[in-house]
Length: 396
Image (cartoon, rainbow, N blue to C red):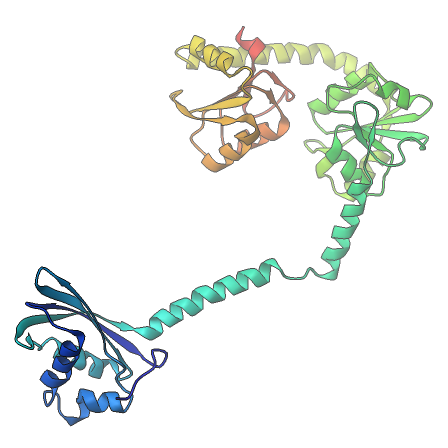
């Protein structure tokens, strides 16, 4: 008998068979050929179709249980779909296998090409994904990557506090004080190598030694936090000039042109001291009023403020955070290190966050985007935000 390769088959007929007795595979195959002979005419005679390769090898799998035989029949076909359907229907006319009654039912007629197309489509997606992820960068991207790598590797650490700094920090007669590592990297991109990160508002005393006999420029963010850093710096080191990022922007997010423009627009610190003294009293009054107001609103909205205090106290030492909904039900507990990821994942529905840690700018930014109402923590590095910031002291 001729055979048809599964590769060349267009359709697969799958049928089940139930036989009231015990028979063998050859008995079933013989019945298929014998009982369909002459039924469909000479053009669709199974034996001739198999000899010509238009019907493939008929597979029969049988299983005997409790005196009955069950199994499946698989017939590959390269006929068109109409002819294949006629063959499938003819198989169902088989009522006896040897002396035993039988029943054949076609379960499905599958288009092999659809399966192949699905495989081709999925495989093509995988290949394209691999190609895209491993694509060679263009010359511009390569240049930028190498340049950035060199500049980041140029960072050194100064003193026992291991402050991030540019490589010329010791030799240069002029020094630029910025807030942190990201700011130092931003200046390195402009080929400015004499900057040092002072560590936010916790400024180390060792910085004083470095700044002796140097012209000192304090380059800070364009917000109230930047003003606070200038004031704290002035208590530790001699500041000659002050440069500020544009209003509402941080040094680390500035483009090269903006950095250079801000440094060129630096002003003498002596001029700022007068402005600071005039603002201090009003700022402190507004700050006190704001804290009292936020605490009043917070206390009013929370039916049981003592419960919040207890939850916050339970977090002490755990480095964890609690996420609460508008009804102050607990949505979940996460480590502080995963808090920002958790907020981004939930996106909405969080009303208040309690954390065993310090509220920083990144957390405030993410909380504002997620429309969180309150952030409650040990301390806060941020004084002004669209989200209400409550510290442990505010709850005392």
